[in-house]
Image (cartoon, rainbow, N blue to C red; front, side, top):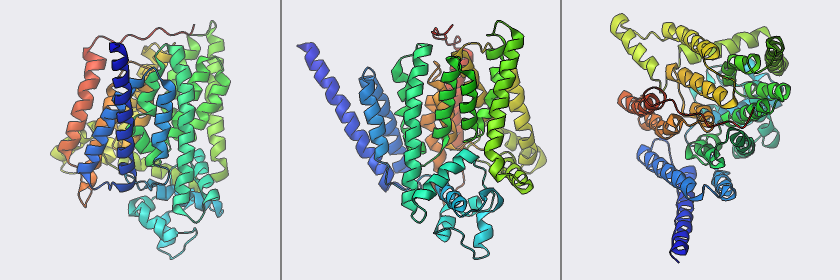
Length: 460
């Protein structure tokens, strides 16, 4: 009798959590402005608590958690993104492709300043994306641009229609991540409900489904590729990995980490080396082929110039870089981003090479942990850390015992307080609070605490 009462209360609480989350997500999608930071923090914090409670209550009911996860996404279907302006540039690029233009060769402002309007709703898209976005060349890889083109094909004159199409593509990718993520968890021998730390996380629902960031599609291909790699289908894994890179370039940093996977797992080192080189060749060949339709000398120059901006001009929500910048101000009297930015890629490459040579990356979980550390180091040293950058870190953590990315997915919302003032100036005390929490958990888990035991992998 007592057990029946407890079970009834359990289900009632779960239903209330779902109902409350539904209401809060609806308010977030349709009534929130990013300048309303009090409501933003309140809604997000409450949603995060409810998300964690939902997993506790329904962790044995994978079907229900799946239904709830995608039900919350459905709430955003007709919402215009309210925390990011990037989607206006996505729509512009897609419509440019549809009109026969190469989006890598033109800045948006070059058309508007000349009173030329090559796409429908050109002025509205220009004002929506903002002058900063409009002033540089696009840097989205080809598969990302294909998604923009698909949106243009279905809605070439309607902004909301384009938003809906792009949102459906991202949600479909989340289905794929759930599918292959569960399979990978089974191999590693981690409970299935761990995947909902990503799929049900309000950070992922809001940043990817809500704000239309295509990290979700890149992550789908990455997890699919890792699953295929684990199953021994390494050539197909390379093809899918290339699709991930062709969506977002960030997975390129993981390629060196595959060295031990091929060299030390194979009975013959020479055969392992051949497989490794073939894997690299397939990834690079397919990625370069995806760029071929856009290739020209101007394209190479424009793309390199735009990517360079992320290291030598843009600054947002950084941690170690801000400390280095402050030291530069103290001794030089001006911002040293041009100098510091040139050293960051070198440091990241050196760190990845250390992980490649000195960490044991022979099991799929060990490989994923090395990827987690590599990406963490990159984000800790980066000049720009937008909230959605954390999505890849979060999905990798699902297959490990580390929780600092989950904590970061909660406190990252503090970075949006920069938009609370008209000049979008960051409060460095707020940034310091965010990273104090993240680094505290990171240092405890990775350095002070005993190394977190790897779960026994089912693979041989």
